[in-house]
Length: 99
Image 1 (tube, rainbow, N blue to C red):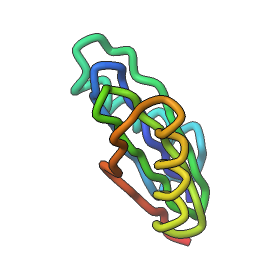
Image 2: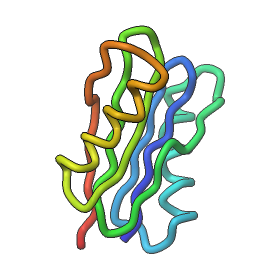
Image 3: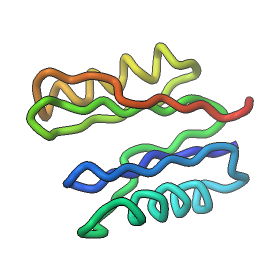
């Protein structure tokens, strides 16, 4: 099963999980993000298969993402990614597919 997380620069987000293809998961996440985003500039930050994905957002607007076999690994990877682009990073969402 595939999942994805998409985000726009102004902070809109979209999520998907338990899709049978990567393309379907990415499209669902982008569609959900685009419904919220005013500029419609959503991009997939991370996709994952039979795993978990996480997004961390910085207090200054940056964001990072990560994936892993479980929630804690996905979150650790997202925080590490976020710390390279911003400060004050916090996990804002973690989702997992069926395995």
